[in-house]
Length: 213
Image 1 (cartoon, rainbow, N blue to C red):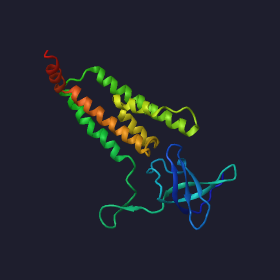
Image 2: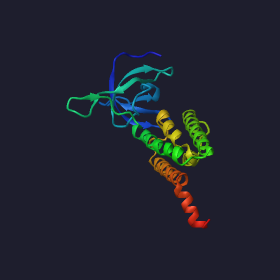
Image 3: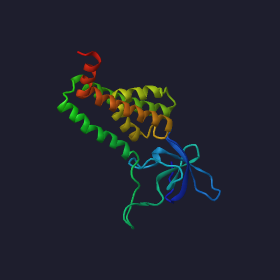
Image 4: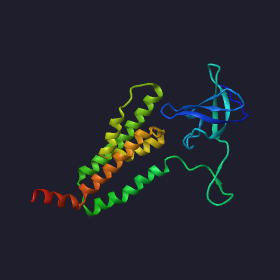
């Protein structure tokens, strides 16, 4: 494969987050350029349609070309005038959900004496959910057998959502399907509410009121 050192610019006009590829439009009637997720730096922000990128062209074995060394064509300004830095990495806000849940989990562990099986459940489902997203992303790239979205949502609902968030951002998987994300965050909220109610003394008070025992 031969790579050109001449850099070009183009706008990302299409991007398939599930399969990890899209097309850049150099403009002026030029042919659109294929770009794969591997053409971006590993720590880059998630590719976004409508954003202009600079890239080099690399010839593939079949004679076609693809974009490599892809990066934003210009840095974006934030904060004080003249301040410049790269765009905020995709998924930062998602990780805040985990950070916000940790204090609640610690309080429940220390003050409300969570049973061991709760710790085991969250640990097992978090690891399992991360692995499930990884397998589904791999299947999406290779055309293999896919996991049902309801299975991913169920794993998150019963406690695996922290692993789901990490996997979503690490593998850039299920981050653009609004319907799925709506259901996912609803399942996260339900899990946190259920955890708070069942782990706190409130659950025993409710049980006492219902049963009278």
